[in-house]
Image (cartoon, rainbow, N blue to C red):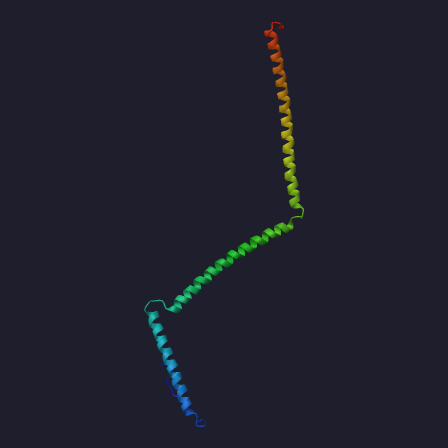
Length: 148
């Protein structure tokens, strides 16, 4: 037992009954505490996890998960900060310059297509002219006035 002494009130204090009541309350509380500690020791000794042990394991698991979340958030924040720093390092008109370069490449491609289409038009005109000349020669030959 933890408590085995009887507390005696001082002769100067005339509240002996109140002291006795407090001593009994304290004794009852200590007895209950001893009983709980002994029960906890039996449970811990039997191999079954106690509520305290289960709570401790849960707290460790939660702490581990929070650590992983903290690392994930730290990585995300660093990635965002890096992206913002890269954007801040670019001159303000860099995006406009990129857009102008892209449009310039498109314009060059359209000019090339226009030149190729013009060349095809010229080739088609020549073919049409040759076909018209051949048709005229064929008509003339059919009419008997061919150049032979």
